[in-house]
Amino acid sequence: MSLRERFFKIHHFYTNPVDWQRARGLFFMNWLMAFAWAAYTFLFAIDDVSAGKANAAVLIAVFFPPIPFVFIYRLLQSGRLATASRLFVVLCLIGTLPFTPLNAMAILLLTVPLVAVGALLNRRALVVVAAVIAMSVIYSALALTPSLNIEEIGIGVAVLFVDGVFLYVFQTSAGEVVSHSISGAEQIEQIVRFANETANIANENTILAGTINVVRDHLKYAYAQIYLLDEYGNLAQRVRTGLGVDVVAVRENFNIGDANIISESARVKRPVTVSREDAEPRRSHLLPAVENGIAIPLLHGDRVIGVLDVQSEAKPHLAATRL
Image 1 (spheres, helix red, strand yellow):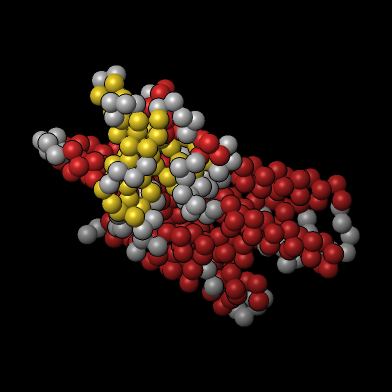
Image 2 (cartoon, one colour; image 1 turned 180 degrees about the vertical axis):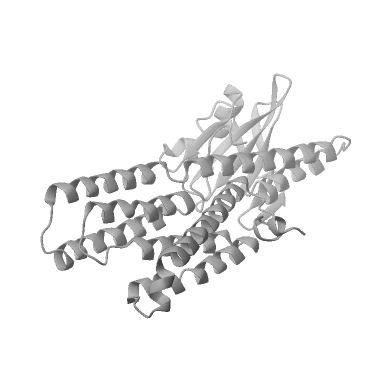
């Protein structure tokens, strides 16, 4: 294995493309900061350190950074991206917090940890880092700076504030989109696999039970049931599962003209969503433990043969396009 392959390449396989991109970026920045530390140490600080003239700040800058650099490198190589990201953000904070009289340059340097946390971690971490930065700026301004240049400091703080708001608004958006896309692709794969497995099965109950199991086990919804339309226009419950229930039986009927979304979905031939905020007649079938649901018509050509009812304990509403 070449030197480049051994030390300058990530060997862990990140399955999530967002994590892979972040790991690559953090890996590059870690090496970049390591080279910057080496340049500072051997070009500027080595003489003072060897002569015993270096102050505490210089000694810390020379001897402390290699430790987190090595830890970040090892964490990334072992797949612990979240821990490596937190350590990198802490390192950026320690290196830029103003422990000297405040000026515009010191404030602008604080954009480094702000951007780092915005790119690598979540909004909660961004808020925590922003609070630490705010407290350090206030402390430095009040305790360490004898005479403040209000205009200069004000511009720096304003830039820092705008950067923080921008990162908060847009942070994780791309990652969430990709994560949802990956989840959707995995769900489609499970559905296609189930369709292939049941293509030659003639037993109706087996197919219905298999459909419910896909919804519960692979799509990860808490509760699901299937209603089949009979010759009188009634929707009779045939299979249900979830929240401690797993039975095949006729238990509850709806007429296709009812206000409940089970009937509405069969009537309009499209998915219909419902939540606890809807009128009681529309959500009368929801179990006490669930927050929202979706009714999906089962069609054979243009004819409705039944309705798949899926319910979720999660607060966010189910999208009609999710299934």
